[in-house]
Amino acid sequence: MRIHFEEFIQKAKKITGCATQMELAKILEVNRSAITQAKNRDSVPEKWLFVIAKKFALIPNWFDDNSGGKKGIKQYRGANGQIKRIAAPEPDYNPEIIQIPKVSAVLCAGGGSFEVDTTVIDNVPLPYAMARSFGATKDLVFMDVSGDSMEPGICNGDTVLIDQSSKTAMAGAVMAVGHEETIYLKRLGLHNDGSLSLISDNPAYSPIHLFGDDLNSFRIIGKLVWLCRDLH
Image (cartoon, rainbow, N blue to C red):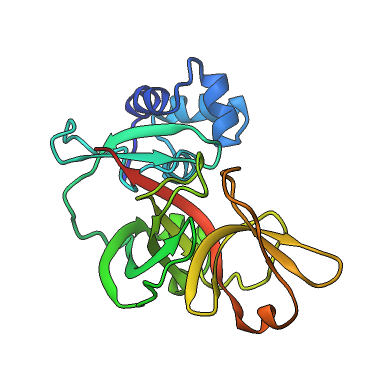
């Protein structure tokens, strides 16, 4: 697919909020000369689309979307905290698109969720290159979030992408975890005595401390790698 330079620049500036090509180069993590070369060739590397999609957590084919907001609006939050609104396109087959399963289990950002069924209820299309950048595609799964304990970053009703291959406890990481019969989305705290804490970003919630026999029923489901939410 050939991506014409001027069309890319106009759409990329609108999506990213960049005013200059220099600012855009920083977002793309390329030299200013790479922008100039793309302009001279009137051709933009396709991987630049994936870089922007990943950093701003946009729908996979944001560049080709021409629905004008008539297909249903979604709001996506990137790792840098910026929020973008873009129209969700009609599903379409693309050999470079991979379907990531969404399961019925609900991660609780609160007191714990008993909805732990792993039945696949939907499939979410992502560009293969983008999905692969998050981890092994076979280990990725979408799950819904319930509760407000991880606000303001993660809200009730958000959908998160979990990398189930990340089973190692990492201090400060937001992870999907299970304890006894409930599952949570929490930030992990690790302590020198071997105990750990399930920490909420919302200060209204106290940490959940696990130690001793508590750890026998603790498990890590995976690490949060992406999130999105619907606009109402």
